[in-house]
Image 1: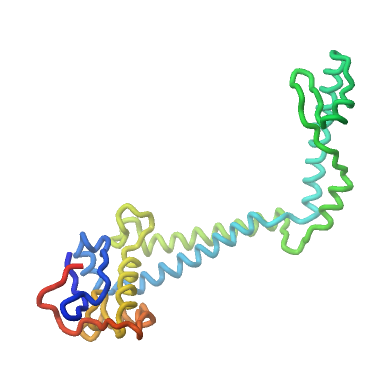
Image 2: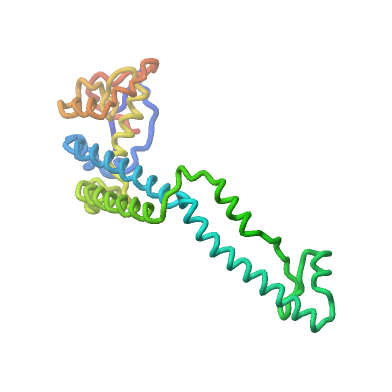
Length: 254
């Protein structure tokens, strides 16, 4: 694959780089330079940004704490399970002691462990009172919390909105799109093309096309695309390199 490249005294002025998929498929590169895809591409970018925002909102909604009143109801149930577990451990320790004749609570005071029947020595965790749980919950900041009902309602709304946006994106950028990069999920060759153009422009002190030729030699469509894509934002006024200012008779390989 050969592309024109700004030169000075016979040497390339733009840092040589690999052109990725365009190195193997010049027809795709040439096809992109009709620039009829820009409007569609910009809509895709906008949709992807909106989808990303909604997915972040969805994540935050899922992780938002429940209202304190609902947390307390759940905590009471958990506390009952906790108490039952402690009681079952004490029962197993007493049954074990009835066989061994040892004092299970003496072992507990020395080691923090209980010897359980048919199980063996186990750490015995400290006791928590329900009043402590209630006090802990009452001190939680309730301002950013949601009720379970409100959480489910918000998630349903977000899911519906996401489905609609993803359908729009699929219509604009279907799986069989000519602009999908082979072997890369959701990769868009148009984005690769733009990034190359930006990289080339960053190395020139005046407007240039994607191959480094002075923009005045570009087609009207390419000059419009230059403005629409805001490539001019990347002009490097301090660069010592200038765009190539005439058509090359002999192309220089990058």
